[in-house]
Image 1 (cartoon, rainbow, N blue to C red):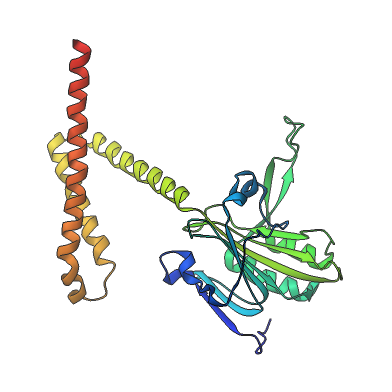
Image 2 (tube, one colour):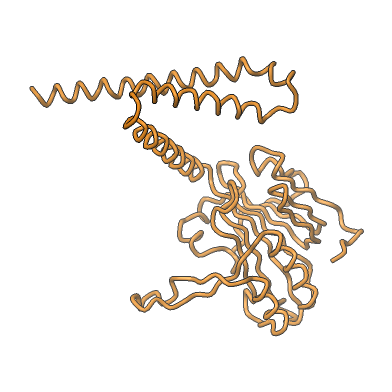
Amino acid sequence: MKRNPDLAKLNLDFTSVPNPIDALDFANWVKSSDVEMTAEIDDEWIENDNVGQTSNQYQLGPRHVELRVEPDRAIALDAESIVANVRPDGSLQFLNLRTFPHAAQSIAEIARTIVETWNLHSFEETPDQDDESEPFKSTVKLDAIAELEKWRIHPPDLVPSFLAQSDANALPGIWFFRITINPLIEDSSQFSISAQIFWRDQAFDNQQRQKAFWKRADEFIDLANEQTSEAKFADVAWSLLYAAARFAAFEHWTGFKDAESFNETKGEAIDFYLDGFRRMLVDNFDDHSDRYARENAKEK
């Protein structure tokens, strides 16, 4: 689809900012305290009481939107409206882009590009024979392109009439990405796409990062324990320390393109890692001291 040259352009580049909310300038948006309750909002999202956590909604449109959340994942479309929901803590909860109405053929072309770019899938609900109260609990993934072609040939007048989305937590910081196609109420031969990005909240991200941190640490320790069958504990510990030092230096090196910038900052980076290692080392020595104290208490 060619862009409408009469539409003002809106660039939303989430790859160049530390927090998604920083990509939005709400100076020209219309603020509302009402949550846009539509069929596209996930039931689980509502059940988890996220609706009550949403304090502000901002609306903008129409615009030609160019949106990017990863270097190879972007959207460019003419949006009739853009809606952003912001949590009370100031973080971006979700963004909803709704296209102008089009006939089924044209809207399917737009949807196909998005599905392919974002590797979306469709799905169908399957009966759970063991739970009569919730007969459709499980889902089966379907090829979204094939399902979209079926939709193009026989578009139903349901809401939504087509749905495709990413896997949950498939992208850093993003809960999931979804598109839906809906017929117009006043003209069922015309359809619009709602493209939605849902971001996880900071508490969830922190929890996930913490779980991943301990999982990686446990895997390293398991490997070190295996190596003590053939080497002394001290030798394994020094190998592990060297590997950590080597990887930390490499991590810092990846952030620079020239030796001058790297050398200017390496002293600060070394201090950062040494300070972090010292704190972790003290914590673990204290942990073993506490073990002695607990064992002595048991003996008494």
